Image 1 (tube, rainbow, N blue to C red):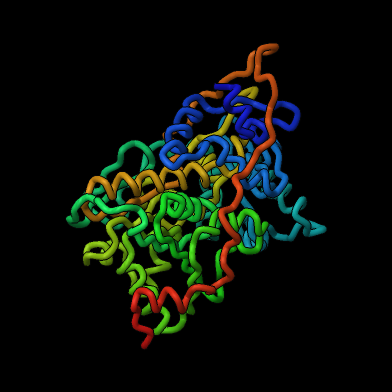
Image 2 (tube, rainbow, N blue to C red):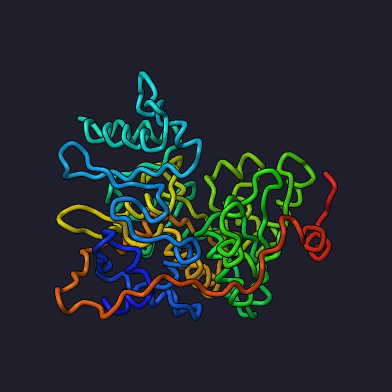
Length: 416
Protein backbone atom coordinates (compact mmCIF):
# COMPACT_ATOMS: atom_id res chain seq x y z
CA UNK A 1 0.00 0.00 0.00
CA UNK A 2 2.76 2.46 0.87
CA UNK A 3 4.55 1.91 -2.43
CA UNK A 4 1.25 2.36 -4.27
CA UNK A 5 0.71 5.65 -2.39
CA UNK A 6 4.25 6.76 -3.23
CA UNK A 7 4.03 5.75 -6.91
CA UNK A 8 0.77 7.66 -7.39
CA UNK A 9 2.27 11.03 -6.49
CA UNK A 10 -0.11 11.49 -3.53
CA UNK A 11 2.65 10.86 -0.99
CA UNK A 12 4.59 13.82 -2.36
CA UNK A 13 1.64 15.97 -1.24
CA UNK A 14 1.21 14.45 2.22
CA UNK A 15 3.16 15.20 5.38
CA UNK A 16 5.87 17.64 6.43
CA UNK A 17 8.11 19.36 3.88
CA UNK A 18 10.99 17.07 4.82
CA UNK A 19 8.93 14.00 5.75
CA UNK A 20 6.44 12.38 3.36
CA UNK A 21 3.82 10.35 5.17
CA UNK A 22 1.58 7.39 4.43
CA UNK A 23 -2.17 7.62 3.80
CA UNK A 24 -5.06 7.11 6.19
CA UNK A 25 -5.67 3.38 6.38
CA UNK A 26 -8.17 2.25 3.74
CA UNK A 27 -7.96 5.33 1.53
CA UNK A 28 -5.86 3.74 -1.23
CA UNK A 29 -8.14 0.71 -1.59
CA UNK A 30 -11.23 2.94 -1.71
CA UNK A 31 -9.72 5.20 -4.37
CA UNK A 32 -8.65 2.21 -6.43
CA UNK A 33 -12.21 0.88 -6.40
CA UNK A 34 -13.71 4.27 -7.31
CA UNK A 35 -11.23 4.95 -10.10
CA UNK A 36 -11.54 1.48 -11.59
CA UNK A 37 -15.18 2.14 -12.51
CA UNK A 38 -14.03 4.87 -14.90
CA UNK A 39 -10.77 3.34 -16.09
CA UNK A 40 -8.60 5.73 -14.07
CA UNK A 41 -5.99 5.52 -11.35
CA UNK A 42 -8.13 6.91 -8.54
CA UNK A 43 -5.16 7.63 -6.26
CA UNK A 44 -3.29 9.56 -8.96
CA UNK A 45 -6.36 11.79 -9.47
CA UNK A 46 -5.58 13.35 -6.08
CA UNK A 47 -2.47 14.98 -7.50
CA UNK A 48 -3.70 16.40 -10.81
CA UNK A 49 -4.10 20.01 -9.71
CA UNK A 50 -0.80 19.91 -7.85
CA UNK A 51 0.98 18.49 -10.90
CA UNK A 52 -0.30 21.32 -13.09
CA UNK A 53 0.33 24.06 -10.52
CA UNK A 54 3.65 22.85 -9.10
CA UNK A 55 2.28 22.32 -5.57
CA UNK A 56 3.98 20.31 -2.83
CA UNK A 57 3.39 19.16 0.73
CA UNK A 58 3.53 21.88 3.40
CA UNK A 59 2.53 20.18 6.64
CA UNK A 60 -0.13 22.21 8.45
CA UNK A 61 -0.46 24.60 5.52
CA UNK A 62 -2.38 23.15 2.58
CA UNK A 63 -0.57 22.46 -0.68
CA UNK A 64 -2.36 25.39 -2.28
CA UNK A 65 -1.53 27.66 0.67
CA UNK A 66 -5.04 28.92 1.44
CA UNK A 67 -5.91 26.63 4.37
CA UNK A 68 -4.18 26.04 7.70
CA UNK A 69 -4.56 23.64 10.58
CA UNK A 70 -4.38 25.59 13.84
CA UNK A 71 -4.35 24.37 17.46
CA UNK A 72 -6.77 25.62 20.08
CA UNK A 73 -5.65 26.62 23.56
CA UNK A 74 -5.57 23.03 24.83
CA UNK A 75 -3.90 21.68 21.64
CA UNK A 76 -6.27 18.71 21.94
CA UNK A 77 -8.59 20.25 19.37
CA UNK A 78 -7.59 21.61 15.97
CA UNK A 79 -9.34 23.97 13.61
CA UNK A 80 -9.01 24.22 9.82
CA UNK A 81 -9.32 27.74 8.42
CA UNK A 82 -9.50 28.45 4.67
CA UNK A 83 -9.04 31.94 3.27
CA UNK A 84 -8.93 31.30 -0.50
CA UNK A 85 -10.79 34.39 -1.67
CA UNK A 86 -10.05 38.08 -1.31
CA UNK A 87 -13.37 38.56 0.43
CA UNK A 88 -12.37 35.93 3.00
CA UNK A 89 -9.27 37.91 3.89
CA UNK A 90 -11.34 41.09 4.05
CA UNK A 91 -13.77 39.46 6.49
CA UNK A 92 -11.11 38.39 9.03
CA UNK A 93 -11.13 41.59 11.16
CA UNK A 94 -14.92 41.52 11.50
CA UNK A 95 -14.91 37.77 12.17
CA UNK A 96 -12.36 38.12 14.96
CA UNK A 97 -13.89 41.39 16.23
CA UNK A 98 -10.53 43.12 16.01
CA UNK A 99 -10.47 46.67 17.35
CA UNK A 100 -7.75 47.53 14.88
CA UNK A 101 -6.44 45.95 11.71
CA UNK A 102 -3.06 44.21 11.87
CA UNK A 103 -0.32 46.60 10.79
CA UNK A 104 0.72 46.26 8.07
CA UNK A 105 -2.45 44.59 6.84
CA UNK A 106 -0.84 41.77 4.88
CA UNK A 107 -1.80 38.13 4.46
CA UNK A 108 0.86 37.01 7.01
CA UNK A 109 -0.44 39.56 9.52
CA UNK A 110 -4.02 38.37 9.06
CA UNK A 111 -2.98 34.72 9.41
CA UNK A 112 -1.10 35.61 12.59
CA UNK A 113 -4.25 37.24 13.97
CA UNK A 114 -6.31 34.16 13.10
CA UNK A 115 -3.78 31.81 14.70
CA UNK A 116 -3.60 33.90 17.87
CA UNK A 117 -7.38 34.16 18.14
CA UNK A 118 -7.89 30.40 17.86
CA UNK A 119 -5.01 29.57 20.20
CA UNK A 120 -6.23 32.09 22.77
CA UNK A 121 -9.96 31.43 22.63
CA UNK A 122 -11.58 29.79 25.63
CA UNK A 123 -14.52 28.90 23.39
CA UNK A 124 -13.47 28.00 19.82
CA UNK A 125 -17.10 27.11 19.12
CA UNK A 126 -18.06 30.77 19.19
CA UNK A 127 -15.40 31.52 16.56
CA UNK A 128 -16.79 28.78 14.35
CA UNK A 129 -20.31 30.13 14.75
CA UNK A 130 -19.16 33.61 13.75
CA UNK A 131 -17.21 32.16 10.81
CA UNK A 132 -20.44 30.63 9.49
CA UNK A 133 -22.17 33.98 9.94
CA UNK A 134 -19.53 35.62 7.72
CA UNK A 135 -19.52 32.79 5.17
CA UNK A 136 -15.97 31.71 6.03
CA UNK A 137 -14.88 28.08 5.49
CA UNK A 138 -13.79 27.08 9.00
CA UNK A 139 -14.18 23.67 10.67
CA UNK A 140 -13.11 21.57 13.62
CA UNK A 141 -10.88 18.68 12.61
CA UNK A 142 -12.96 15.51 12.71
CA UNK A 143 -16.26 17.19 13.53
CA UNK A 144 -18.24 15.24 10.90
CA UNK A 145 -18.65 11.51 11.35
CA UNK A 146 -21.86 10.70 9.46
CA UNK A 147 -23.68 11.70 6.28
CA UNK A 148 -26.42 14.30 6.14
CA UNK A 149 -30.07 13.80 6.99
CA UNK A 150 -31.66 14.11 3.58
CA UNK A 151 -31.83 17.90 3.60
CA UNK A 152 -35.06 19.39 2.30
CA UNK A 153 -36.54 15.97 1.48
CA UNK A 154 -38.14 13.14 3.38
CA UNK A 155 -36.98 9.55 3.27
CA UNK A 156 -33.28 10.00 2.58
CA UNK A 157 -31.04 7.00 3.04
CA UNK A 158 -27.26 6.83 3.12
CA UNK A 159 -24.97 3.93 2.25
CA UNK A 160 -22.18 5.07 4.55
CA UNK A 161 -20.32 6.72 1.67
CA UNK A 162 -21.23 10.34 2.39
CA UNK A 163 -24.15 10.33 -0.06
CA UNK A 164 -27.75 10.62 1.11
CA UNK A 165 -30.02 9.09 -1.52
CA UNK A 166 -33.54 10.47 -1.71
CA UNK A 167 -36.02 8.56 -3.89
CA UNK A 168 -38.36 11.03 -5.60
CA UNK A 169 -40.11 9.04 -8.31
CA UNK A 170 -40.25 5.98 -10.49
CA UNK A 171 -38.33 5.28 -13.70
CA UNK A 172 -37.08 2.15 -15.38
CA UNK A 173 -33.39 1.29 -14.93
CA UNK A 174 -31.28 2.96 -17.60
CA UNK A 175 -30.80 0.44 -20.41
CA UNK A 176 -29.42 2.58 -23.24
CA UNK A 177 -25.81 3.57 -23.79
CA UNK A 178 -24.08 6.41 -22.02
CA UNK A 179 -24.05 8.38 -25.28
CA UNK A 180 -27.83 8.85 -24.88
CA UNK A 181 -27.43 10.52 -21.50
CA UNK A 182 -27.74 14.30 -21.27
CA UNK A 183 -25.74 15.64 -18.33
CA UNK A 184 -26.19 19.28 -17.34
CA UNK A 185 -23.25 20.40 -15.20
CA UNK A 186 -23.96 23.59 -13.22
CA UNK A 187 -20.99 23.11 -10.90
CA UNK A 188 -17.65 24.88 -10.65
CA UNK A 189 -14.08 24.48 -9.39
CA UNK A 190 -13.15 20.77 -8.90
CA UNK A 191 -15.49 18.20 -7.32
CA UNK A 192 -18.57 18.75 -9.50
CA UNK A 193 -16.63 19.34 -12.73
CA UNK A 194 -14.66 16.13 -12.12
CA UNK A 195 -17.93 14.24 -11.70
CA UNK A 196 -19.12 15.70 -15.01
CA UNK A 197 -15.82 14.90 -16.71
CA UNK A 198 -15.94 11.27 -15.58
CA UNK A 199 -19.47 10.92 -16.97
CA UNK A 200 -18.39 12.62 -20.21
CA UNK A 201 -15.48 10.20 -20.43
CA UNK A 202 -17.96 7.35 -20.12
CA UNK A 203 -19.69 8.72 -23.22
CA UNK A 204 -22.39 11.04 -21.84
CA UNK A 205 -23.36 14.22 -23.70
CA UNK A 206 -22.27 16.74 -21.06
CA UNK A 207 -23.13 20.43 -21.15
CA UNK A 208 -21.43 22.87 -18.79
CA UNK A 209 -23.70 25.78 -17.85
CA UNK A 210 -22.23 28.98 -16.43
CA UNK A 211 -23.32 32.49 -15.57
CA UNK A 212 -22.23 35.11 -18.08
CA UNK A 213 -21.34 37.48 -15.24
CA UNK A 214 -19.97 34.94 -12.72
CA UNK A 215 -18.47 32.01 -14.66
CA UNK A 216 -16.63 29.12 -13.06
CA UNK A 217 -13.81 30.61 -10.99
CA UNK A 218 -11.52 27.84 -12.25
CA UNK A 219 -11.38 29.70 -15.57
CA UNK A 220 -9.08 32.16 -13.79
CA UNK A 221 -6.69 29.39 -12.78
CA UNK A 222 -4.31 27.30 -14.87
CA UNK A 223 -5.87 26.68 -18.27
CA UNK A 224 -4.48 23.14 -18.32
CA UNK A 225 -6.46 22.21 -15.20
CA UNK A 226 -9.67 23.78 -16.50
CA UNK A 227 -9.20 21.94 -19.81
CA UNK A 228 -8.67 18.66 -17.95
CA UNK A 229 -12.03 18.93 -16.18
CA UNK A 230 -14.06 20.57 -18.93
CA UNK A 231 -12.51 19.71 -22.30
CA UNK A 232 -15.12 16.99 -22.99
CA UNK A 233 -18.08 19.30 -22.36
CA UNK A 234 -19.96 21.85 -24.40
CA UNK A 235 -20.29 25.36 -22.95
CA UNK A 236 -23.56 27.20 -22.40
CA UNK A 237 -23.49 30.66 -20.79
CA UNK A 238 -26.64 32.42 -19.59
CA UNK A 239 -27.61 35.72 -18.00
CA UNK A 240 -29.37 34.72 -14.80
CA UNK A 241 -30.92 38.18 -14.46
CA UNK A 242 -32.77 37.61 -17.75
CA UNK A 243 -36.19 35.92 -17.60
CA UNK A 244 -35.59 34.40 -21.01
CA UNK A 245 -32.24 32.91 -19.99
CA UNK A 246 -33.62 31.59 -16.70
CA UNK A 247 -36.31 29.95 -18.79
CA UNK A 248 -33.62 28.26 -20.88
CA UNK A 249 -31.91 27.09 -17.70
CA UNK A 250 -35.15 25.63 -16.40
CA UNK A 251 -35.73 23.77 -19.66
CA UNK A 252 -32.18 22.43 -19.60
CA UNK A 253 -32.49 20.93 -16.12
CA UNK A 254 -35.93 19.51 -16.97
CA UNK A 255 -34.60 17.83 -20.13
CA UNK A 256 -31.44 16.47 -18.49
CA UNK A 257 -31.00 12.88 -17.40
CA UNK A 258 -28.44 13.99 -14.81
CA UNK A 259 -27.96 17.42 -13.23
CA UNK A 260 -24.80 18.24 -11.26
CA UNK A 261 -24.72 21.33 -9.07
CA UNK A 262 -22.53 22.43 -6.21
CA UNK A 263 -24.23 25.48 -4.76
CA UNK A 264 -26.31 26.02 -1.67
CA UNK A 265 -29.97 25.16 -2.38
CA UNK A 266 -31.13 28.77 -2.16
CA UNK A 267 -28.96 29.78 -5.14
CA UNK A 268 -31.18 27.92 -7.61
CA UNK A 269 -34.34 28.46 -5.59
CA UNK A 270 -33.87 32.20 -6.10
CA UNK A 271 -34.25 31.46 -9.81
CA UNK A 272 -37.42 29.49 -9.21
CA UNK A 273 -35.74 26.09 -9.55
CA UNK A 274 -36.15 23.66 -6.65
CA UNK A 275 -34.37 20.37 -7.15
CA UNK A 276 -36.98 18.24 -5.42
CA UNK A 277 -39.82 19.67 -7.50
CA UNK A 278 -37.93 19.35 -10.79
CA UNK A 279 -37.05 15.70 -10.19
CA UNK A 280 -40.53 14.81 -8.97
CA UNK A 281 -41.99 16.48 -12.06
CA UNK A 282 -40.51 13.82 -14.35
CA UNK A 283 -37.31 15.83 -14.69
CA UNK A 284 -33.83 14.36 -14.33
CA UNK A 285 -33.38 10.77 -13.30
CA UNK A 286 -30.52 11.88 -11.03
CA UNK A 287 -29.88 15.26 -9.44
CA UNK A 288 -26.45 15.45 -7.82
CA UNK A 289 -26.13 18.16 -5.18
CA UNK A 290 -22.58 18.62 -3.87
CA UNK A 291 -22.13 20.81 -0.79
CA UNK A 292 -19.64 21.01 2.04
CA UNK A 293 -21.89 19.53 4.69
CA UNK A 294 -25.06 18.35 2.94
CA UNK A 295 -28.28 20.10 2.00
CA UNK A 296 -29.78 19.73 5.48
CA UNK A 297 -28.73 20.84 8.94
CA UNK A 298 -27.95 17.40 10.37
CA UNK A 299 -24.27 17.40 9.37
CA UNK A 300 -23.37 20.91 10.33
CA UNK A 301 -25.55 23.53 8.69
CA UNK A 302 -26.96 24.08 5.24
CA UNK A 303 -25.44 27.55 5.08
CA UNK A 304 -21.83 26.57 5.73
CA UNK A 305 -19.23 27.16 3.07
CA UNK A 306 -16.47 24.62 2.46
CA UNK A 307 -13.56 24.01 0.14
CA UNK A 308 -11.55 20.85 -0.42
CA UNK A 309 -8.99 21.20 2.36
CA UNK A 310 -11.25 22.35 5.19
CA UNK A 311 -13.99 19.88 4.20
CA UNK A 312 -11.44 17.05 4.38
CA UNK A 313 -10.30 18.26 7.81
CA UNK A 314 -13.91 18.45 9.01
CA UNK A 315 -14.30 14.82 8.01
CA UNK A 316 -11.08 13.91 9.81
CA UNK A 317 -9.32 12.93 6.57
CA UNK A 318 -5.88 14.12 7.66
CA UNK A 319 -2.64 12.35 8.54
CA UNK A 320 -1.06 12.47 11.96
CA UNK A 321 2.53 12.94 13.10
CA UNK A 322 3.59 13.42 16.74
CA UNK A 323 -0.09 13.73 17.70
CA UNK A 324 -0.66 16.66 15.34
CA UNK A 325 -2.73 16.69 12.14
CA UNK A 326 -1.21 17.42 8.72
CA UNK A 327 -2.89 17.76 5.35
CA UNK A 328 -3.49 14.62 3.31
CA UNK A 329 -2.79 15.37 -0.38
CA UNK A 330 -4.14 18.48 -2.11
CA UNK A 331 -7.73 19.49 -1.31
CA UNK A 332 -8.48 15.78 -1.13
CA UNK A 333 -12.21 16.27 -0.54
CA UNK A 334 -12.62 17.57 -4.11
CA UNK A 335 -11.35 14.64 -6.20
CA UNK A 336 -12.66 12.11 -3.69
CA UNK A 337 -16.13 13.68 -3.83
CA UNK A 338 -16.06 13.90 -7.64
CA UNK A 339 -15.28 10.21 -7.92
CA UNK A 340 -17.87 9.26 -5.29
CA UNK A 341 -20.60 11.36 -6.91
CA UNK A 342 -19.93 9.96 -10.39
CA UNK A 343 -20.09 6.41 -9.09
CA UNK A 344 -23.31 7.15 -7.20
CA UNK A 345 -24.80 8.51 -10.44
CA UNK A 346 -24.14 5.23 -12.24
CA UNK A 347 -25.58 3.24 -9.36
CA UNK A 348 -28.76 5.34 -9.36
CA UNK A 349 -29.22 4.98 -13.12
CA UNK A 350 -28.81 1.22 -12.98
CA UNK A 351 -31.15 0.92 -9.98
CA UNK A 352 -33.96 2.82 -11.69
CA UNK A 353 -36.12 5.52 -10.17
CA UNK A 354 -35.60 9.27 -9.83
CA UNK A 355 -33.11 10.40 -7.23
CA UNK A 356 -31.68 13.37 -5.42
CA UNK A 357 -28.11 12.53 -4.37
CA UNK A 358 -27.17 14.78 -1.47
CA UNK A 359 -23.37 14.59 -1.44
CA UNK A 360 -21.57 16.02 1.58
CA UNK A 361 -17.87 16.58 0.95
CA UNK A 362 -17.08 16.36 4.66
CA UNK A 363 -19.09 13.15 5.06
CA UNK A 364 -17.45 11.57 2.00
CA UNK A 365 -14.12 12.20 3.71
CA UNK A 366 -15.33 11.07 7.15
CA UNK A 367 -16.04 7.55 5.94
CA UNK A 368 -12.38 7.20 4.86
CA UNK A 369 -10.71 8.86 7.83
CA UNK A 370 -8.51 6.49 9.77
CA UNK A 371 -5.15 5.96 11.42
CA UNK A 372 -2.14 7.02 9.38
CA UNK A 373 -0.24 4.14 7.82
CA UNK A 374 3.26 4.34 9.24
CA UNK A 375 6.39 4.44 7.12
CA UNK A 376 8.88 1.99 8.67
CA UNK A 377 12.42 3.31 8.92
CA UNK A 378 14.66 1.69 6.37
CA UNK A 379 11.83 -0.21 4.66
CA UNK A 380 9.58 2.50 3.31
CA UNK A 381 8.85 3.18 -0.36
CA UNK A 382 11.83 2.94 -2.68
CA UNK A 383 10.98 6.36 -4.10
CA UNK A 384 8.28 8.99 -3.90
CA UNK A 385 6.99 9.97 -7.34
CA UNK A 386 5.94 13.46 -8.30
CA UNK A 387 2.19 14.04 -8.76
CA UNK A 388 0.94 13.68 -12.30
CA UNK A 389 -2.07 14.64 -14.39
CA UNK A 390 -3.91 13.04 -17.28
CA UNK A 391 -3.74 14.68 -20.68
CA UNK A 392 -6.79 16.82 -21.35
CA UNK A 393 -9.10 15.35 -24.00
CA UNK A 394 -9.33 18.78 -25.63
CA UNK A 395 -9.16 22.45 -24.83
CA UNK A 396 -12.27 23.56 -22.96
CA UNK A 397 -14.59 25.67 -25.14
CA UNK A 398 -14.73 29.41 -24.65
CA UNK A 399 -17.45 30.66 -22.34
CA UNK A 400 -20.80 30.20 -24.08
CA UNK A 401 -19.29 28.88 -27.32
CA UNK A 402 -22.01 26.25 -27.71
CA UNK A 403 -25.05 28.10 -26.35
CA UNK A 404 -26.82 28.59 -29.67
CA UNK A 405 -26.11 25.04 -30.85
CA UNK A 406 -27.40 23.44 -27.62
CA UNK A 407 -30.54 25.59 -27.61
CA UNK A 408 -31.27 24.67 -31.22
CA UNK A 409 -30.42 20.99 -30.82
CA UNK A 410 -32.75 20.58 -27.83
CA UNK A 411 -35.44 22.81 -29.28
CA UNK A 412 -35.50 25.10 -26.24
CA UNK A 413 -37.86 28.07 -26.17
CA UNK A 414 -35.97 31.36 -25.99
CA UNK A 415 -38.77 33.83 -25.21
CA UNK A 416 -39.39 35.16 -21.72
